[in-house]
Image 1 (cartoon, rainbow, N blue to C red):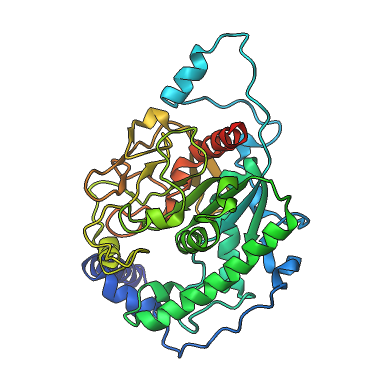
Image 2 (image 1 turned 180 degrees about the horizontal axis):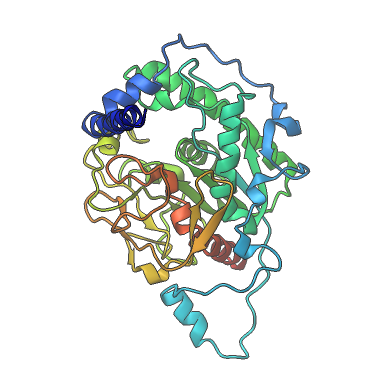
Length: 397
């Protein structure tokens, strides 16, 4: 019996190693097989204009008791002991050099934080997620705890439910059908945003934040709702993380510049994280095949890279500048803040954000040392500080 069990274990190990080897050799082909829908596309009826007046259409909004985005790691919860600080580079140095009797910083204005969650629907049965899909909604609540929570000190959180495009829509060769699924998802997002605008004060600052598919929708939202309009002056910052933004073909259409100073309000932050040695072929193939907002191919253009450790474009920072990486446990129910362990630098040619040697963040690091899942947790505490600085700067402006 023991020998049979050992044979079974050996076979499992061989299968796992074989699967990992195949995934590294043929990541695009295997991903398409696993995730691209086999079903026909179903046209999504437009939601009613007032659909998002209903609290049931939101994961998070004022008035909802269950707020996953309000989550904090144990070290930041009320009553927790003080945590060791890391150096934040020039920002920390300026604070340390300030006179002892210097006036405290002005109160933090309360923003409306509009967060659009990344893809949580992986099913091949549909091109767009049903709003009541249990698995997708479970994953979304995990994303809200680990990603949206980085911005919860900035004010009231708003995170809509939306009929997101399934993961396979971003891998499909049929770009026409995939585009219809992504457009249907965006129509929900923009309705939710317009509802938020109806309910908040007309002069309240706004923070836009998202990841992956959520960031894709935010770029279109900026282009259509903010660029060249008075609304743009209310945006403290737009965190379009985990979705490539071309400096040459996309940025001008967003109506906000890249963030070039840590206390600059009204600007865009974007990055795509890889450890070294990085193999971004999977990402770059899709990027090179796409077209920018100005109609030109993105091929050969550089991605926008704003270093989240410095808050500035095309920068580099040592690990000591990292105020806290949010490292999740295996089931993503809890996480700990690890200070001063992850550096970051914007790669000169591509615009990828490189974090040096691989770090242990869990089992969801993608092939090629792609840390896409952890784009925000890697720099969680720095982002909390970043959004607060930009809010104060917007108020001062």
